[in-house]
Length: 616
Image 1: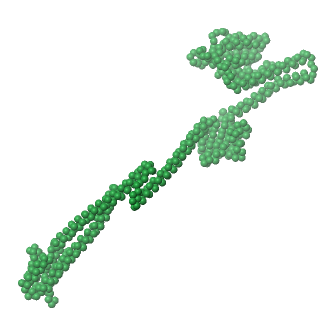
Image 2 (image 1 turned 90 degrees about the horizontal axis):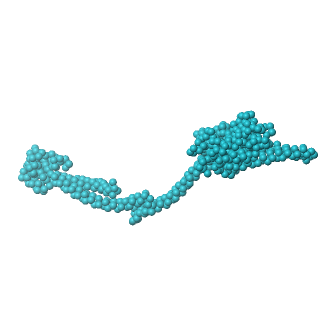
């Protein structure tokens, strides 16, 4: 229901209630006053008739009584009159026949006139003696007509007043509604985001004050909205930036080769990156949510006893005492100052541990795990290598130093002197050979094939060239070169492959007795994995001798630096030749295979990837 309709109905209801009270009161007063006047007139006329015909009633002067009755009727205020004697005999009566024939019922109030006729009676008294009775009747119909007319006039006036009130209410409602409609439209535009819209202020009443208040509210809301929009944009940008940074950090943590474990403000594991789980082998569900003590116990059980995890609390205390002591990023070159653990798994990983204090609202500290297994192994190998190299170099250097000292301190005949110088020369050559082969091995490991010139090489032709240029020991024949059949192509560095084959040939002659043949051959690998098309996957260069051979234990150590199967020292060599061969073959993507029987000889097979005949 519209406000205008409510206004009209409200005013109408009030007006109807007031008119009903007013008209009801007026009609009631009108009726009561007219009834009282009617009763007064009847009573007055009756008293006059009662007093005037007293002698006529006593004397029963009918003519006088008739005259008095006619005069009462002539006044027009009485509709029926009747005079009775003491015995109830009618002395005179006047009035309408309908009044004459009806039964007379004396009434004390007009309200008792149910038949529309008010009956009134009074006794004729003389000296206190009742001599007769006067009866009067008056019709109440004129009074009812008067009241009905008054009601009609009141209804007409009320209807007119209601019409005027309705028109006024409509005009008032229209004025109020116009302002309210303007307020509603302005509110709708405000709700739609039009904070620049303002209401038109008219007049100086409450509606104008409401419009002013609305305009102030719209202005304040506009400013507040601008501030909120700016703040929301700033927060959205900050949130997007934080999300981007979080995604970047998550990606970095996920791709990082180093293990990372973060603890929340309650000192429980909040995050463990994939590298940590991979390095330690711990399931993620067993790690997340652990407090520092439980995490220390769980990781400690995964370590070997001699290199156990010291615990988060110990690292935290060390970090606070000396921030550099548990920060691997600052001491990569000073491993001795870091905490190191060794895991008890089959891989026996060695991890450096660092701790970074965060003290933020969400992160208390971060553990850092760096896999230094390779570095540890390299350090161990370097130590062993240096120790072995020093030992191998010390032997010839001791001989050189000793014989040189003898030559300086004593005089020897020419034969002894020449023998001593020959030993010094031989040991010097051995020292130079060891150093040269060490340098070759270091260069191969450092460059890892960067200086290789890989081309398509005919292995059969290369082997024939190596055999033709090989210097066999005095009294020994060169190996029989392979047959000049069709080419067998490999992709290789010609110079390095020549060095590897030469080292194998040299060992074959050194570890076989004089007169024992050394055989070389090149062929397709008898059990190849086929390559593209019909090209064989591998070409095999094989060198066989009939020398001292090796036991399985000796065979397993071939390729170790400075290892020599002959421990007597009678066979010259550095123990580095086969290490160089293995490195060269591995650089070519090939494989070194050995087969040996103690006392029967050794066969060395160099397997190299075959090249396609059409390759260049």
